[in-house]
Length: 466
Image (cartoon, rainbow, N blue to C red):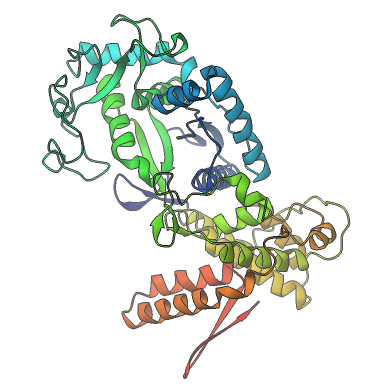
């Protein structure tokens, strides 16, 4: 039985799609004005693993990941570059696809661009106006009236009192309330013609939030099963999506909300504003893309992901150990069928059914690798079969070992991770002392997913490489 942590209820729930056997999934994609960074890589890899497991579990999945190809940042960048919006976004969409393909991310079933769905956005805005939930402001913008939508704040857990004027939204005299958000932006005199669409309100363009509501409901229906994205989108973007979608359509918009955790560098969120972000292309110069994929999957999707070259180097060594258990094949072989009666395979399934717990699932792969070295029959075949579910171990082992999976700059970084391992062991000991056994088990599983085996003795805990 698959259980999913639903951000809306703040609890794990049994997954029951709207239509038996079918899953409708929407994930907020990239705003294409620059190269994708590691935070984008996490979103792509996490929800790629989710859709792979849903399909493996027998569901017919329709996976939609949108592209935002019109917004303020895009217009500004195109003007700065003295190029058209279409040329800018086309270039970075191609770059995004190259990065995603390198990371083994399967293409979504639909990849809608916002600019192709402006009529659907205007239709939703019209419904909101008819119901008194939207109004045209003095500056020509059309805004959503937040206080007229009583359930506002359910997803983020914020009350309207928490969101008083000046705390979250700059006061705007054209708005009836500072909390209101824009649905349609009136055209500005200095904006290029390709950033303008005709409407009943005059020329303009859609606000960011209405874009996702229109694309999701147009392609998946008024109620979708899973809506995913980064934790930074929970408020205000996803909160606003709920308000405008349910306000217009009078039905539940999303059954299960999923949010992946932040990527962190030196205990700060990776972000362009802090200047501590790394593009996927920069990281690929130093590390093999499969290493990056393993690095992302060995943390639970809801946990913070701590970025460093040392952690990536450790992931590289872990991946080489897994490939080392596959023998000396020079060619890529098709993975065997998964034997779901096998104890290891059952543990893998239990992990993935427990809110897509990839760290525990990866720990099963390392146990199978150890079984291979012990000569356990069938372990090698099941190792490769299960790894393929996560998009791993799909290459010829001999060629991988020759390549070393690393660029010239990454070679010497691996040994510096001992302090991190010792820190996690200490955290686990504290969790056991506080009787938080689930946290202790999670830390053990995460370390095993990194190829680190813990051995508890009366005198303490030691560790070794698998």
